[in-house]
Length: 594
Image (cartoon, rainbow, N blue to C red):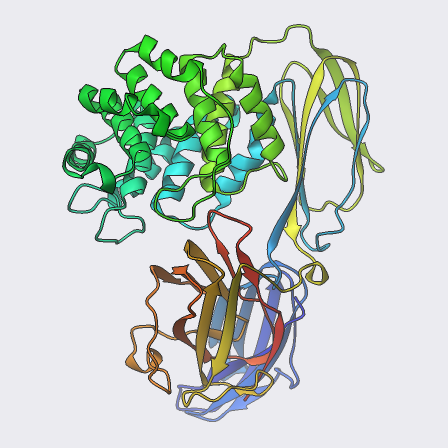
C-alpha cells in the first residue's frame, strides 16, 4: 500500500491508413489510476506507435483487476478495437500476523473480543469457534501447520500427522482429510532417493537418517488409519530402514533413532525383536522420545505387557535441549511423543495429567514453537480428547454480538463458528446455563510497521545491493533496465541447521533468470556458499542453509522493471526449529526512474 508506479500503454497502428482511437480503463480492487495526458482522440499515422503512461497508486491489500480497451473512432475505424486484462496483487511490506485467544469459560461468564492494536486496519479477519468439547484448542496449532510455507521431509510429514488426527477430532475436516493425506503421501514418495530413504528437501540425492524414520512413522500412522500406501514406496522405504538398522555400528546411529526404526519396522512388518530386546537392555540411555518409540514397537508387536512395563515408571525430570539439525527434538516434542504413546498403551497413568499440563503451559498464542512440536502435540491431544467421556451435564446457550446487533447464536448441542473479513469493532460473548464453553478467537492480518523493529537474536542476516561492478547502488536512484546484484550474508552465534532466509522483493523489480551466466558472477569473483536449497518465487527468494560463526555468502540478481516508488520489505532469517534464533532487517524505500 502507498506504492506509486507508472505503467506504459503502447498503441500500434498496423494498418496502412491513419486512425483515431480512444483508450478507456477500469479497475476493480485496491488501486487508483490516472493519466497525465488525455487518452481520448489519439491519432496514429499508418504504421505509427505511441506510448502513454498510467499513474497507479496502491491503496489497500488484495488483487486488483485491470481492463484496458482501445477503440477506433470514425467510420473508417469503427471496427478496430484491442483489449488487455491483467491482475496485479497488492501485498503489504509487513508480515502476516495472528493474535489468538483460547479460553475455557463457565456458562454465565462474559467475554469481550477487541481489535488488536498489533494489526493494520487493512483486511483484518476474525474467526470465532465455540464448542462444548475442547477440540477447538488444537485449531491454532493445526492452522499454523497448514499455513507453513516450506516443504521439507519433516514439515510434509508433520502436516500428514496432523491431518490424520484432525479428521477424527475436527468434523469439518473429516471429508477433505483423505485427499489431503494422500497428497502428503505422494509428496513424500517424490522425495524418496534411490537408496529407498527420504531426502530432506525435494530433489535431494541423499537420504536423511532421522527424517526418513520420522516420515516412516507418520506413514505408519496413516496406514493404521486406513490410508493406502503404494507397496512400491513402502517396501523400498522399509528395506532402507532395515539395512540401516543392521549395517550401521552402534556408535554411528544413536540409540533413540534405533528405537524409532524399530517402531516403524514393527508397524509395517515382522518386528525386529532382537534389536528391540537389545535396546530395552539399555533403556537407561533412552530419552523420553526413544522410550516412547521402543514402547510403541513392543505395542505394535503385540507385546503389551512389555510396552506397559517400559512406560509405567517413567521419570519426568531433566530438560531436553532443542536441536535444529540431525535428529530433531525438543522438550515439547519429547513430552508430546510420550503422552501419545501413553494414550495408546497406558492411558490411566497418573503421568498423563502431568504431561497434559506441561503441553498446555508450553503453548504460546495457541500453538507450540515449530512444526514438529505442533504435529506431535496435535496427535497426543487428539488421542486424549477422543478418550474423554461425553459430558451430558452441559446445558448452555449464548450469543456473540457487537454494536450492530446479534452475530451468532450457540448452545451445547453443536459447534458454532462465525467469521468476518472486516473486524473493526469489539464483540461480546454472553451465555447462560451450566457447563464449560470452549472458545477460540483467531484474528489475522498484517502487523503494524511501527511494532516490528530490526533485531538479531543469535543470528545476523544482511542484504547488500551492488551494481555489476560491485559498487553499492543508491536505492533512491535506480533506473529501468538496471541489473542489481543481491548479496546476502548470514552468521550465527553457534552452529545452527535448517535456517530459512526470506528476501521479499519490492514492486518494480523481479528476479533475473538464475540460469543466466551473468547473474551468478560477482564483480570480485569472490567465493560464494551453496545453500541447501533455494526457491525463486514471483515476489521473493527463499534460501535454506546451515549457519556458523563464520559468515556465509549467497548471491542472486534482480532486474529493475518499473518506474515508481516502492516499499522494500525487511530481509528475515530464522531457525525453522528454534524460534529464539532469528534475525530481522530494516525496511527501506526504493525509487526507480526512467
